[in-house]
Length: 119
Image (cartoon, rainbow, N blue to C red; front, side, top):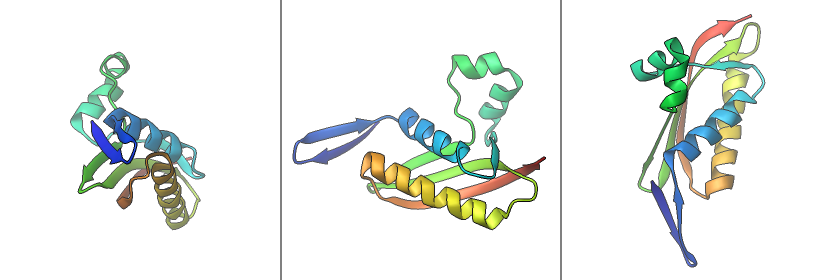
């Protein structure tokens, strides 16, 4: 649970909120074909889809907040033939905008890991 205080009180954000916001934003970027598992727990959720739904295992997104700043890591596959540099730049810009617009927390770093290419 992340709590942000302002002059009116506090706002609480859950990690699930950040994961769903980041996933939805990244999946809607041009050139992104899929979110990829990045941990063994996520890979189990891929192998056993029912397990992933029951335990709400996020796929390919890591979020941490240190010193009031957001650090994001995502694992994706991109479509074959697209300019990977342009896709990564677009994802970073859209993620930064979405998170800062929704939460008013500054995004310090975004790491985009390209795990595969798809047709």
